[in-house]
Length: 312
Image (cartoon, rainbow, N blue to C red; front, side, top):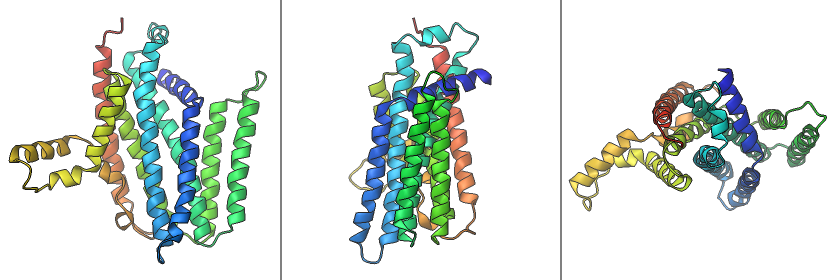
């Protein structure tokens, strides 16, 4: 277990140092803030527009992070020959792969926490909270994380920059929850939604690592994106009745819908998740169990393939 933890931590450190992720995070924050302008154009549907577009934005950018990291990090280890320095040590290939999985998932969850904090701050202002206070919270959290990460990077510092980013993301999310809740907004439906998005990130990471265990980054990204698109369309494929398609194609599409992960489960909409704090969590727990079983099966299959892969 310690070996898996070490690989996961190193993967998280490598991902956190990637400037592409910071650019994606900034873009996601900009898109989330832009939903306020779009909501102003709606007729008495401002809250609904922000909730729908905000949730979709967090999910979409979380998917992009999973695809980018899941399709590239394992290949980089092989391409740079760093994997050959790790495997001779007392660590199994499946432990290395599982460590990579948890490191990428933690990175994705950190991304979800940061974008989720921006979303909740925005939602809190719509519900009547102070916009000035929301800006102060966001600015203060960003400056604090930056200052601590800079000081942690010093040679004499004992702080781990990666832990600083994780703790900062968790703190920012907690402060955003407190602000949004104090503004009168019901938090429970949004928390349920973000929990499901976090599981979507985990399942897609397992899909990407499965393909990455035997394929190139481009092919891995293309196949994983295709699986995600099919998974989002699983309910439609199972009930397709177009007269333009032959029965054989319809049967094939229905069969694929049964095999690919049903990513629709992780974006069910506000009606399924409920609108009050007392709405049941049964759907969320069922979807989390489905996602955990699917990710475990994919990791087991990916580990079996990776163990038999010739890395010479």
